[in-house]
Image 1 (cartoon, helix red, strand yellow):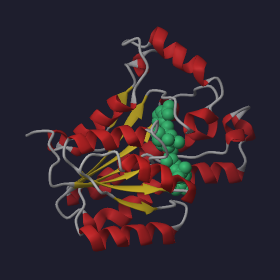
Image 2: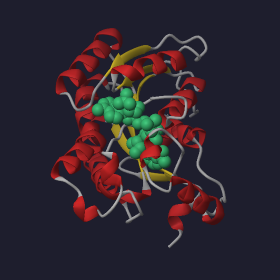
Image 3: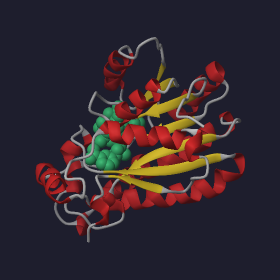
Length: 257
Ligand code: NDP
């Protein structure tokens, strides 16, 4: 058993720019020899994904729009992938969104609309793409999503996203149970805080990063490369006995009380 993913094809969802966690995952997979397919949400993200993908040596990956709030967009994206590849071996789901104003103030003030939006994009989308990809994973598969400690504990300023992450983590377990008979594994990585575009929406993010540096067992913040290498493990045969799991890649911060 090795980490080599030569001859295997993975969909990477959620590269917005070079700081995106999904870009860390893409580089780890590319270095292990995997064929990549990228999907983006907003039209304005396409250029940035194309520029980044062009930096991957020797690869000319397929790049498609997949707005996870639109069933049509998901269907069209996965139909194109099916026509061009037939078989895929996994998906990196690195997609989330909540209204900025819902990430501040009191959780009790969360609106119905904000609650549903956060759950739609950040949680339901995992089930929607797992369903769309299921019949393409005929050689078995591995689906990996990104979560955060705020789904397990109440953390300041995470509010509705914490509740959506709890739903995402439960979805990982139910999907693992649902898809296991097809040899499709579903796992989450609970990443420590990383300065990305999405993280900009979280108030006092610098204070959170400083706390990790001072208190986490490894005394350093998490990098997208660390998350990418754990994703590589979860995509590889080395993790073939693991499903429904949530692996913390957070310098050990979650073990603190
Ligand atoms: P990014 O902003 O780089 O990535 C978020 C991605 O979500 C973007 O590529 C965005 O694409 C995509 N997205 C949002 N809405 C949609 C939609 N409707 N359809 C398709 N894609 C959509 O931030 P991160 O890399 O930080 O976030 C990636 C994941 O990691 C998220 O699940 C996040 O919660 C999680 N995470 C982040 C941590 C951190 O500290 N940064 C810590 C732990 C987990 P577009 O802009 O094109 O819509």
